[in-house]
Length: 377
Length: 128
Image (cartoon, rainbow over all chains, first blue to last red; front, side, top):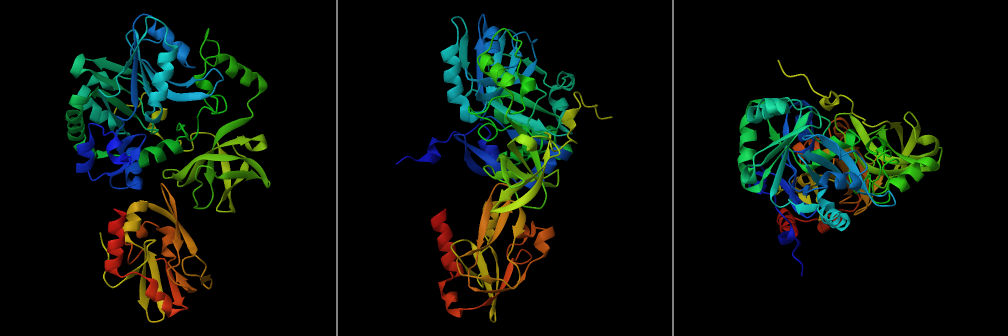
């Protein structure tokens, strides 16, 4: 009999999760904290203060050697070939038919490219990247040796400044710096998945616990708290950020997912370009949009959306919009309903609940919207 | 884990406090902990009739939705209207301020099917 508990991987931060009172759950093959004190409180901590997420389950794949940048550029839809050292780019990676294999971050680290992929897709991505790699490009699995913390919230800069000084505070949104070699290698980027200002810090696994302790010590005055995957989901949802497996997958292409801004059709070539171009010429039939529900019921993934009694689409993610103050969702919508301001009904437990179609994000007060937040006086 | 001695329980993690011919119903400390932050509780209309083991409400937590099952048959005489504005009472005070429904017990024999605190504790042990 398969014992699933022993098959789960633990991140290097596991002892700190247990010491912090985390409720641990299986997630994408890892034993991860879903919550500590509670999703509502953790969500608000990130919106108003600063919180720390263990995101070590994310997968790191380095492309090295001559042609690494050019190969990365062929793998993904966004521009990652000519970007300068320290630039970070969010991008889908697509099949030849334009379906989304994964959505990822690409870091320019000198001539190398570091790809940070979703945990659930890691093996699939690695196989795809190895299969398509040209001679001379090394595909290096750095997943097991890399630990990652996301420090997020309006007070994140003050905390990270105590560890990294101006090197961190000088970073613009989607910029990174890296330093050190071997076990002392560190990568810090101004990135995140919450809608707030924040940083993601990568270190090698042997230094993970020391990083956790330094960050919590540096943030004690700011009331820093650990944040679980539950709040990570409610934070990203009201920002309208896609969650792979819910909102995007290989049956969806980037244009209908509202990711046209990440697709550079003018690039000489990338995998999926012809299919995406054809989809654009044919017209995008459905669109991934936000919903803000009236009433208190939550529309879960799979819930049907109707307009005037006729099918209009289906919910892909839904929860409480904790900072919006109403339940929110994302849904693929078609026809007249596929535009912000349209009125639809979400059918929860057989009963229609009115909802307003919204552009993404549904929450618009996040500090991430300013490219470089003002430094605290 | 808080499992008050004086209450009766169901395997679906409801508790029942018998008061004369009425019964007050809520969900257990274990249930609220498993659900996480409760954000919406949908309860039956006062005057409606509940049937034992049938769903008569739903509890929305951030991550999941759960049915509330009637531990006993009977007429719903009152529901906790405070949960409308403050569903977190279910998490903060599952056995007191977080109560959900007051029933007029239609069939006292159904009380025999409920679990004692010891039996519920044992049921949870089998769970874990």
